[in-house]
Image 1 (spheres, rainbow, N blue to C red):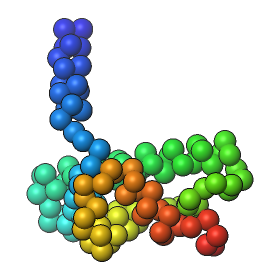
Image 2: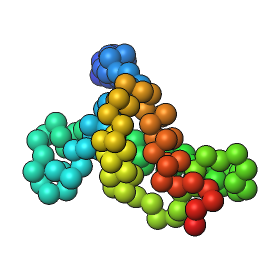
Image 3: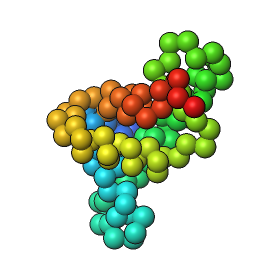
Image 4: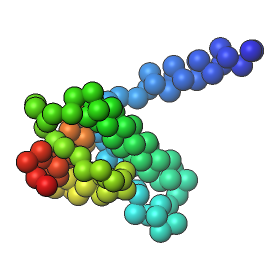
Length: 124
């Protein structure tokens, strides 16, 4: 139990130093190809892990919302079943390369734009 306050302090310090800018997401997704080829630094692996975790959480949240609201009314995007974080990482990397000023935008905004661009609800 004596480690509990230290854990809380570490978590608080970690989150206090982070922002919601998209640059960590973009950087992590950009590192994924090097990780897949076993050519990434330790930091590159950690950054890519952030990207994969971000997209895993985003898709899981989408699936919950989809189950609770099965009609597509008001959705900006509709994800196909079987979509993977690796696919989303590549799309994030490609979109960020075409929109370099997006690194300072909120990460959730970049994620929403990437998904809406790649998976509009009318597209099958």
